[in-house]
Length: 161
Image (tube, rainbow, N blue to C red):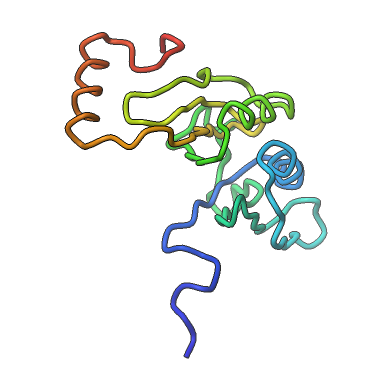
């Protein structure tokens, strides 16, 4: 019997669209330790119709932007509608590695009210990545209290945004 979810995948798999999928794969390998799983080049072009990488075993699918298929990258759109949260063993080290690889810092790595240490970067292709390391186990009540304090202060992000 064929499994409805293939081995190594989860029910939810991000699929991102970039302008320059080959370069994006190289960046993700350098910045986040990604491993390329597969690529399907579009015939007669230097673009990828589909590719897959894993980061610590989690799959991410990606492709080059293809207006003929109705896909557009964040830079063309002028922004994003979501971001990728990436849990890692050391958010500070991965943040520094991503910036050294060409990411733009968006929010410095900081201890957050919900028990994670987190920073944000924007990759060279316009996607936002939250880099997180879980540091404290908190109850829902403790998280709610921390949230209310942050909301009252008006400073949700440590960089002032």
